[in-house]
Amino acid sequence: MAAPVSVRLDDDVRATLEADAKQHGIGLATYLRNLATDRAKLVRKANIRAESRRVAEYNGDNPDVREFYDFWDRVAKGANG
Image 1 (cartoon, rainbow, N blue to C red):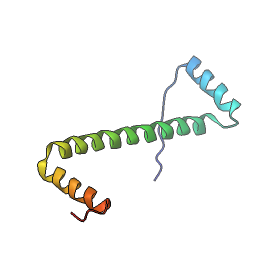
Image 2 (tube, rainbow, N blue to C red):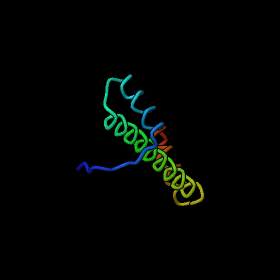
Image 3 (tube, helix red, strand yellow):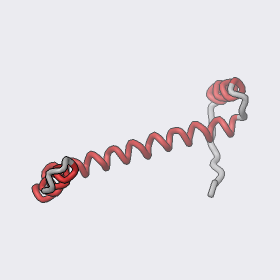
């Protein structure tokens, strides 16, 4: 569910963003919403990558996990364990 957000901008910042929004044929609110949405996507992807790195580091240091991956790697290559 969307929720309104109030943001205070300096006059020069607002003028710059309004001009860019106008060049894109959208209003300032839509422009700011798009900026926020794009940034949120980048933050989520960065968080996923960081968590994936953490899991990979754990997996790389865990002999049981390494054995599991090695087994399934052999199965995938047709060696049947």
